[in-house]
Image (cartoon, rainbow, N blue to C red; front, side, top):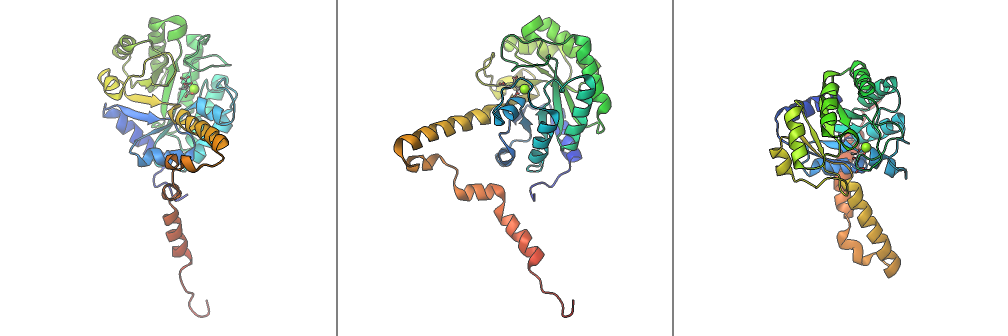
Length: 301
Ligand SMILES: C[C@](O)(C(=O)O)[C@H](CC(=O)O)C(=O)O
Ligand SMILES: [Mg+2]
């Protein structure tokens, strides 16, 4: 509340316009709605809701256990806390092509700026793990077409992700990406490319915006923003970075508290109360409240 000034349509337009500049867009994956404020305040222009984080938040592994309505609810809470365009990871679309279609409409209604759908089978797994299986190319193109037909706002970004590189090789992944673009995908997420050469080959072959997944402890090297921009990539994704940072700090903090019997030594690492209140916009609520209540009624009213 009192956090957003823009409509979903404006944010979708903003994301489209930003991608059209050809400059690399850095997209951190949120931990929760509150971190969306922090991502916005630190100057990022878009944010991401990761399937891995949404699942981990519920104490679940990233194997397709969450449902589309569960993630739509979280998306709704998130988009109410920020003006940034938010892209969500919609996994495999949660079932048949008709489920993918419903997922698109749920995500539109949640105020998101776009989503990505991947070509894995269910149960899916993290794109950087071995043993993935992909659905036949035609099945995924049906998924994409269903998503495109269901979309009501043409600015809502539909990104197709292919996990085929690790399963069928680079050439097949490129062929699939082209087929998904022909089916109507606006952008492509080539998952788990091996090295810079592969990023380059993919870029040369596919003529829509491309996302580079810079997830930590995965298959690829972490390429910096300058390198990705030179490679011609449009979005640099940091899907689980905030979760890993926070969980590292929380675990260290718990061990220190248990060992020292006080949190005193942890204070310098904590966000202060005043910074938290600043993020929560306490002042604005106070102003809002007095504007509503700070008046006197005329006699007899
Ligand atoms: C991008 C991703 O799909 C996610 O859910 O965030 C994951 C990230 C990860 O597990 O590190 C992925 O499959 O790459
Ligand atoms: Mg995912």
